[in-house]
Image 1 (cartoon, rainbow, N blue to C red):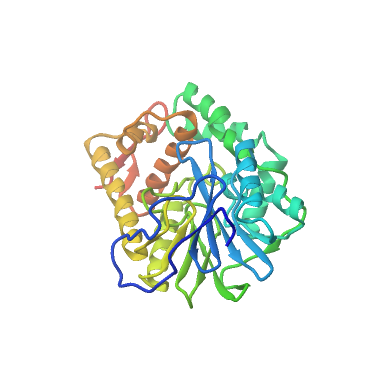
Image 2 (tube, helix red, strand yellow):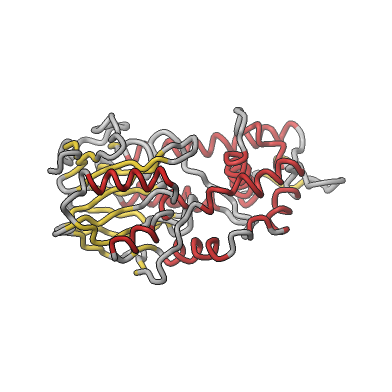
Length: 358
């Protein structure tokens, strides 16, 4: 064991119980915690309210397979250098697995693959979506994106902030490598002496990859199941009528049906935990409660979508948070429209209003 690696308890089978935290103290910068034999957990800092992303290192014979990266900024690179000279010193990196397209997970993929001459393994969706943004960094300020916010009732000033400052984080990505190895749901991935099933979820990110070692009940959940927050589930401007919340809830139901209740969950943020089924149920109930709050508000009187922001989010939001919040609100609206729980009221001047279905 390298000197900066804090050894933790071994993975074990337990009776299904609500949210047990076997590692209540997260690793410090430059340190790692062994969460199962040959699996290390570390954190890379983020400059946001959610101030970290989890990365994992899986024993891969003569080196470490890496899962996720952090964004591309100076603090993240410094954290990586501390890990490389500390708990990872003396062994090479063998390959990089990226779970999804968001910058906090793929941001340093190009830097790591070039620095260590290792392959990038990810979904085709993650690679192409990230490459698309990298090749056209100004696309989020195009009229179609601006109109997406305005026609749903957001004011000009807030729209301008979201279109500029609100999407800055999407540029925190090093240039991707020119090639990648595609992972698809249903694949089996051998890492060291373990076999991982490749799973895919949706709603938070399209074709988000997860890894499950059935023999040891180890579940690398990416951002699909987080312990104290709900992952952002947003409608994209390029697919304004999409139903990401419906897809997300379907993914949670599938995880409950396919995975055991007593596995160790290794999420993309916050703490590892036991209690997958309980947490999936809590997340589903959370979104249903939000839908009910929106229904009650629209039953009282018709609302433009933007007017419903305070129903779902009561605290003040900065531009970064506002972009996420507004798109998540629309995810709930689209979900309820698709199920006939809301409908568009008779059109008057300005953006259309929503009302509860009779």
